[in-house]
Figure 1 (tube, rainbow, N blue to C red):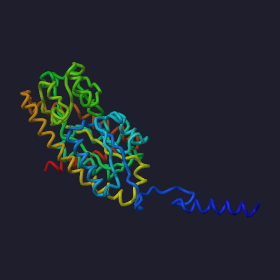
Figure 2: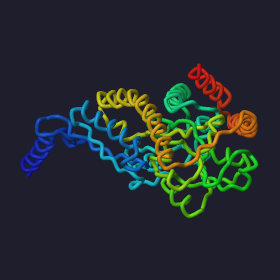
Figure 3: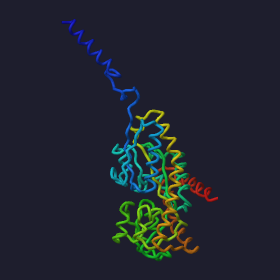
Figure 4: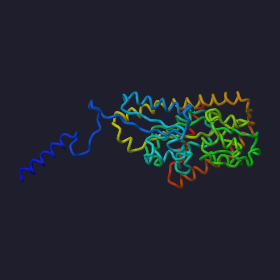
Length: 347
């Protein structure tokens, strides 16, 4: 009887030994002994034809190429996997492995990073994107600690596109303006009425009169076809804001990548910071060309009016400084670095 039990025990031990890593955790490998390919889901709120979605597709292809096919990235555009305002949560909870959307769609959740969206007179998308990445790398905001940040990117100066002519602050009184995050505070400061609507829903909202105008980068007028449903483009770049967008990865999925794969992700992401910034600037040019073809009217503010708009939004910066101080966050240093970065790019 004892001999039979011993034989059984030996058989079990032998079976465990033959199972790759014994009776413990089994390592996923191919027949050639290499790690099995990893497939990651990527939720993007931009539609497939948008230049930023196309740039993300190129990023994913480059990652796959450099990992020799060991990492494959399945992209779901148009917010089909997670809506724009749920994308960050979706990555954190593992609904998607990677996600791209706007910080502004989760107002109040990113108190330090909100400075990136302030009306500081951004000159272009390259500057906005470059400075945003530098500051996030320097300050490593705690509000982003539950995900792995691959990189961020940000559009060129936000302007006002409207169904009604706007030449002064008085023309903004009571105007319903699509705006999200801090841009809603800009609308309030200027005397308008902000309406929080995510970008994919803006075209229909303008078309149906839910809003009279939208605060946006010029690129949306073509990228989201909104130029078709507005009549005027107002050059309000004197208070040009940006909307910073994250590209983040689920922490557990990041940890499961090999060190070599993580290195490739980091290298490719660093290269695509500039590519996304340039894509934003090209998209702005395309947006201007698009509305010109549609024969929409462009309006410029006088120098005095530009100063009035600048003065009107100053309290937004003051509020940011007050709120971050109350929360024990380095808002003053963050904003100072941000303003210096924008000023350096303008020189």
